[in-house]
Length: 368
Image 1 (tube, rainbow, N blue to C red):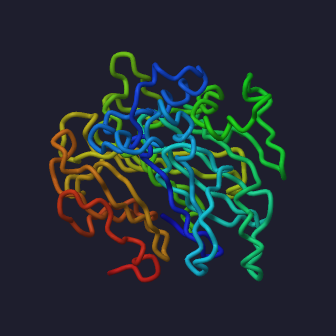
Image 2 (cartoon, rainbow, N blue to C red):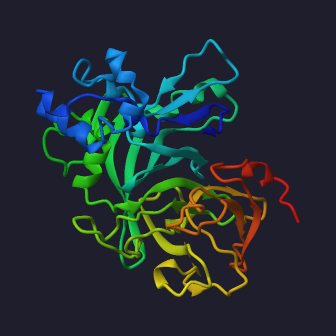
Image 3 (cartoon, rainbow, N blue to C red):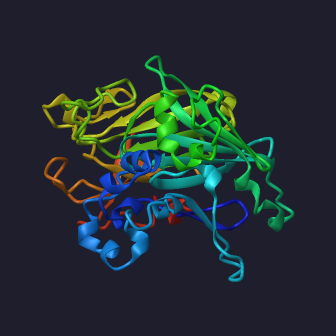
């Protein structure tokens, strides 16, 4: 959950697949069935929740299109209870972990997003219109028009934002390289955003969670929590942006947009942190910070999940998964990365199964 520059709340529909049950083989429409399969609908967790046994809307055999109504970013106005929440469908449909905004120099708004699942993608949306700081109401439609992009990370440390589709008024203009049925029915670019990203050759990442713009460094930090399936039999192998097979530790990538412009379609990137323990003997579990092995006094870290930035630009990192014996077997915590010295420190350790403390309160006045 984040806020927009005009004070609304952007909340994300993440693991929506968990609530749908039924038999996908009984769905007669091949397209509907294939999209559900791409999104993990129905989920094995459905038996745990049991919604589909009591409510037809969660049974894909009785309501096969209901799942398409979930997986969006929802905008809520906390200042006006009469204004209904709106699903901003132009931002794409996937398991949104984040939807964080930045205002570009030309006034357009950019929304950075991660799809929190193994081998999924990093996205951004660039609005057609410009933010008006003097007219709050005029900003409410900004997230309905613009272009949705997906990230391609090249092995030479460059990258590109590949356009998926543009919404311009009542028109949806898909990437011209996309095949049917996306050209004749372009709304599918948003209903099946994952399928489009597959076709466009975007980079499959190790569970992209928080994606945040650092206002001091003018760069984007991407949390890749972990992906223990990377390089396993039948699974995608490693690449420069996801370099570890059976990645239990996770990592953090820093993106530098061309000309420091968040609306740019080109970027460079660097591996900020390969998570792990500086004392580990296994290279796949060892801690590296900006390409250098951390000294043994540096705290171990794994499963980065969320970010915040203080007024100096230092990166505050909250983790979610350290206690697993496959990772560190220690409490999760909040860490700080000094963007100038590249020094990592642990600020606090927290109870097991507590995902994310409120690190955002340290933005304005970082502790000393």
